[in-house]
Length: 300
Image 1 (cartoon, helix red, strand yellow):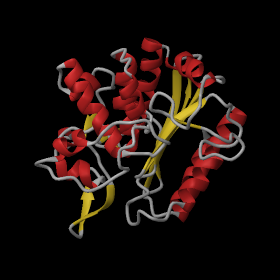
Image 2 (cartoon, rainbow, N blue to C red):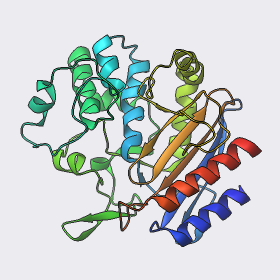
Image 3 (tube, one colour):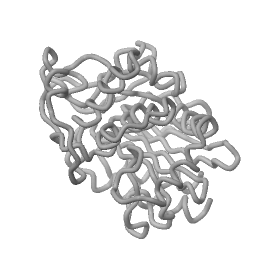
């Protein structure tokens, strides 16, 4: 982990972020190594920082629910994989957002990454199962992964941008998740680096995630498979050069990511607060993602 720590420190010294956490997961042994670095202080024992997972929320909610609840529905598959022809994004009213999301016709289309599709999937599954979505979701997650409204004053959070010119600490960065003020499937989960590593290991043990995804990806036609993002060009990807064609995961707007190579049975997680000051400059973050990923695929 010494090399990864050096790369993490270099990232903090050249970016707008103030914290980064990294984990490497060995799914063949069901274990992981991790560390967090905050203001140049490294913690390798028990990570404390609750990062805003941002869009990592989507696979941890919708993709996991699709598997754990054994959902088989062509319309829901379109929504899960961003092929349902819903708008990509838009500001939603906290009074009529459900009516708006449910008003769109779901029809097969080209891939358009869509927060609205993620929300529609959630609403449709709630109707189908007759259970609150949050209750279903949390059964699949480590206790140190929380809906942002459930964070405690003692949970250590770090800055992610601003709200009304005030520093945002402990509130979800996504404007719709913040404004709707209820549990949502497109963004809103916070958690530590070890909690996410444990969750991915446990879910794989319970549902054979790596085997399932490898089988699905053999038939891959589009970018998203089972709600997970995939790697189109393994030699030039934010997952890091050197992964196999059977690599899946997701990116989060705040500077988070996880990637799993189902063939190598290896994964890595990178959590940052890249949106601490600016949301539009991701050059250093993306360079860090590539360097760390390439090192991990090659050396582990």
